[in-house]
Length: 348
Image (cartoon, rainbow, N blue to C red; front, side, top):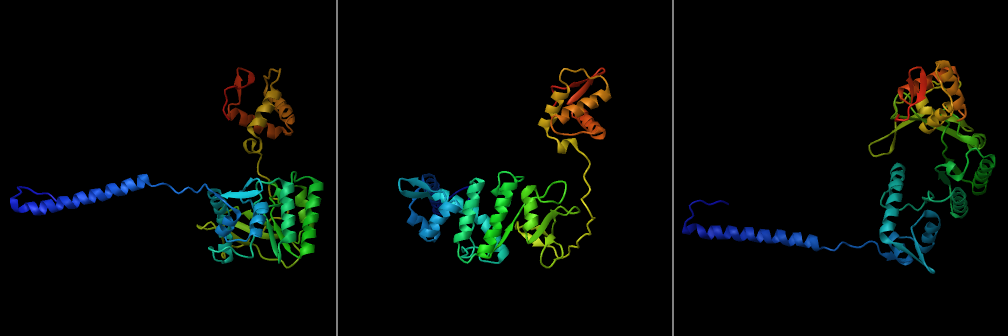
């Protein structure tokens, strides 16, 4: 409030206004000091097993199971186990994000832990340990019906190992027979065809009851198409889904399946940039230009073939021409006068 030409009669009003403003400033200062002096609650404090069980609302047996198989971050001091509250909260949050998506899709409440769903976090373990943990879980969890393994590749060191593949598929078959359960797993396809990757893919195709393929629609990359490649039961029509704004898969009722051509899909044109890494290009060039002076284009192509062959890349004439064009465009090989030379200052 502003006053001009104040008189004696205005003093009570002015003093009252000043008092209000002073009181307001005092309140602001007190709140500001309170925020500055407020001690943040320390969440990096150890919790006992009993405290963790109370915090999570689980039994001790569930706690020890989750410690062994589910990745609860524990600290062992002598014979005692402790869990830091902040690390436990981080572990919970990571699992909650995945769990919430599952619960939403299943139409279950997100604020409760479902009694019939158990998640195992096995990322930090080596393949044999992951396999052993899953085997024990399948053998001990009561009333088990469905097991989803994302994905089977994480059980192997080598996807092309016949012994590893046979061992894992044999275990899968034993588990399904002993426990009368259904196992659903995932494996990526080869880039150049629709076959599942490696020897493990061959074994899966031979033994699985159903093989479904999920691939991105070539006309609309926001759409994924699901279809049966091999099925021992009734066939189903291909269907499609896309990921919605809530990061959940959403069925597309309007999708019309496209008729596929028989045989392998058409192979994309050879691309030296996509199909050959920078390190391989440079190693091949070093081999091609060692102790030689290349002055003709035909000789240059032959040297490229030899250099790339040493890197296990076979180039015919047409591919060698594409590689030569690529190297020229990238300024990895330059021509000085009549001589072809490696450009030491090139950037990939």
